[in-house]
Image (cartoon, rainbow, N blue to C red; front, side, top):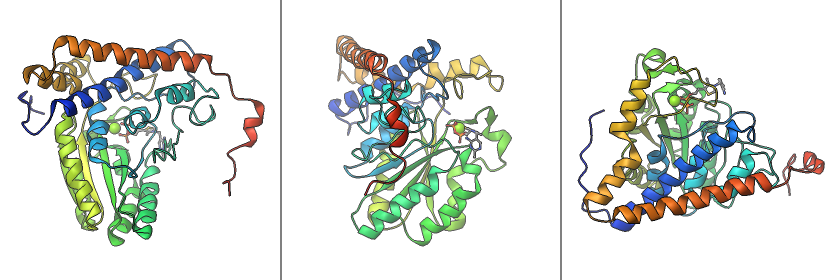
Length: 331
Ligand SMILES: Cc1ncc(C[n+]2csc(CCOP(=O)(O)OP(=O)(O)O)c2C)c(N)n1
Ligand SMILES: [Mg+2]
């Protein structure tokens, strides 16, 4: 990927840019804190951090409207924060406490919020893709104009169920945006090792689904592409594919020998392509904010994240009775 230019786009207000900066920073600091709590033994099981990929979900949430739905994989903390779920509830779920979004029974990979239209959090690679089409089917049936964002990875993009879903979604003209977060690796397997056709956005062509590739380290580019995809879906034209090129800085999960890439590769992405640094430069060079303004935001975010960690440590473990709840649908 080429190094991008750092001049502010004229159609973006200072307020918008500051909002994206805040939201991306919240995800990054939250994930760093989650990494620390994991190291301290306060979080158990799997924990997949989103550090590096923040511009994807923040850009797409900027294109969404109230009532739109989202569903994603196990790398889900960023999606929850970006759609407005409370950092305290997410962190407490990570520590397996009663104050968590699944009352401590779901952990990192299994959280939901009906209120924020967040449908998980799914540990089975690719499983959320047909679920996303199902959510979109509901909205099409109801004729409510809503759109679903179904996020999945480059590795998941090689799954059979994705293509069955493409076929049905196009056939039924479902309002679903298939967002491929191409962070270049599936656990330790690079895209170039797993496929001879790395243009994942083109794979809808066989089904008649339009798609495009987006620079996922540029929140403004993601937002613009998101708006186009949303307009396509809301106009009743069926699904759309966005392949968002991004990068994760941390390991796949919390234990990752990282033998599949060099430290230099990671370092280069951090130094030259970081999405938060990009917005920071836009804010400063466009004189939309001063260093002090940004420091104040950093301080604010730190306080929110620290508060979430305190809450997550203090919230009690779920009672044994919780074993018997959330098993059957409540009528
Ligand atoms: C059906 C299934 N197969 C294998 C796994 C183990 N697994 C977990 S994550 C993962 C890699 C997926 O990579 P990608 O779709 O690129 O998403 P990323 O982790 O990069 O966000 C694999 C193989 C699984 N959870 N489910
Ligand atoms: Mg991947």
